[in-house]
Length: 171
Image (cartoon, rainbow, N blue to C red; front, side, top):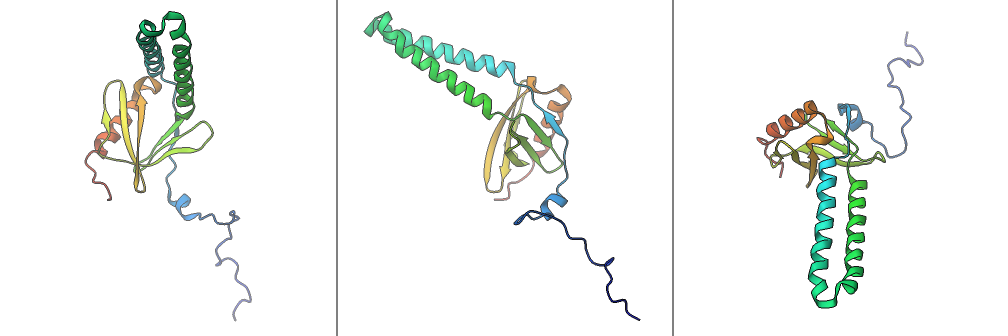
């Protein structure tokens, strides 16, 4: 005799939002999120760069216009440089995820800034890692300062970059 309704054999329905495909999420291995600290070395270097550019601009204009007339454009350049520095600070990632074939950088809002695989153009050094990440057909470069992570995580990133240097791009 055949049972009228066998619900145990039917797959369970998932309550997913419309247009959402669960297959990539199910296959993706979740890597732990590692928090990034703001890099003091990069902040100091960028702030010093703004101050040097303002001083150079002022010393260029002062012989032509005089010190008092060269001061407002120099201060305007400094304000623009500080606003750009602040915008750069907000655009920096707050977390990174390192997986076996995946690297992701997540902003403070939770948006994925970079999500892909490391490529062979990655460089590493004692103070700075330049990681090239391929996202589909686009490539993005992410700079990670060594003072924004603990030494073990910097070592893991450097090893990941070295192992990615042997990979050939999918293009």
